[in-house]
Image (tube, rainbow, N blue to C red; front, side, top):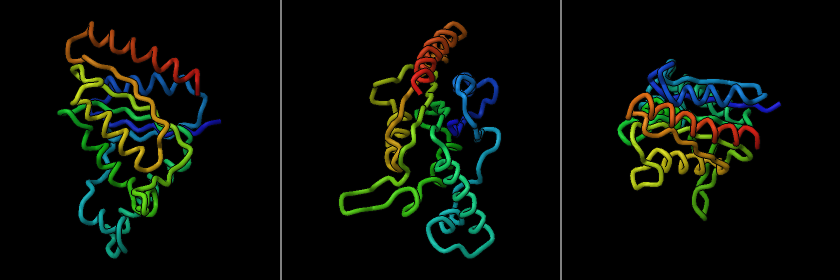
Length: 195
């Protein structure tokens, strides 16, 4: 049985289009599921103590706690076969809660390393499905920044098998939401069949 790590980042709880699609997708999988909902349970802000604790030698209680949290989050990724991200677009970027998670996850010498040929990701053999939701239509445009960022940051740590599913135009009302959900669910159905 596969291990699936679900990472939700919307602040809208049950009203979130990305959360609804993540739940829909995960219900189709026969898997052991670990879920983190950063909207409901945000991680502590990645600050000086977190940076010192995860990049150097922790000395204070706060720095040790940051290192322990980072190790826990990395352990969840290492123990998973598939990562499922719910990523709403906020002001053309990803939610701050998700950025904080990525800051705790990306650690030199642990999840990536620098080599003579450039950075090398150290997390191997994982797949990711990233569900992107937005009020407008941004797919394949110059401001499709959430996809570009997620692709880059996942590749950076070694996760290169990444599939993106869009739910766009949700800011245009109920009919647009239904259309976006239907299209996204059809793509997610196909992905679930091929896993």
